[in-house]
Image (cartoon, rainbow, N blue to C red):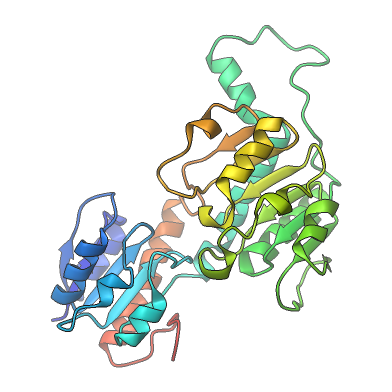
Amino acid sequence: MKRLLLTRAFPPATVAAARARFDVTLRDRTDGLSPAQAAEALQQHDAILCTLGDGFSKEAFAANDMRCGMIASFGVGYNHIDVAAAQAAGVQVSNTPDVVTDATADIAMTLILMTARRAGEGERLVRAGGWTGWHPTQMLGAHVTGKRLGIVGMGRIGQAVARRGHFGFGMPVIYFNRSQKDVDVPARQVPDLHSLMSQSDIVVVTVPGGGPNTHLIDAAALAQLSDGTVFVNVARGDVVDETALIAELSSGRIRAGLDVYAREPVVPKALTDLDNVVLLPHLGTAALEVREAMGQMALDNIISWADGQRPPQALWS
């Protein structure tokens, strides 16, 4: 029986399904593997089910006595794995793309509404006992219906956000994508990122993290936003230059809703001190049925590999 490492306390259904098929080692913790721990895991296990925050860096794949042949990442993003180093070492990598789409798009809409309508501020006001009653100019936010929605990255999640915005809120949709994209929702592709940023009332970032997308949203891009724009990031924290975003938010020009951060779980005090930003603790896929589906998809990839077949969500042939 092949040895499988579960790097975290995954949902009970995932753990039970893994134990039914493999010799499982469960790391019953919430913090990720360090690169040194990841290297050790690669030497001791045939397969690994890991997730965001596990340090499968280039250095982790450097050992010659590697036992592991398969890493299944629990989540659509895999920038915690040096995939080039994994491939060079002969270790297959998979992710869980489709099952996270709707849940992540729902969180994007949650952040749009919370940020535009100042829901976070309002909830804090009520909890603090500071609400003195309704009046005509209390906590005026921005209307969402009919506003122009700009999406950075028109993959599965971007298109799901576009459908919600267009059909649910009557929002005209524009998008920036590096390649030409045919989409199933009325939307207009713009030629460059700065055009999207300058033309949108609401911007949602949904591109993969890492690589060429690191600091894609930099100071120059943020400077294109009009006063009052709502900026939402449900991608990865490293896609946005966090220092530049804090500077724009500190000026009071824009509002933001964030589910991800550059150095999770570290959230800069400069962000938590601001009222014009909604901060969520990476809730994108945080629904039990979604997490169970992610776990089963990850296990299905490992089972296919163990049976000598190509994993369905393998990152390469």
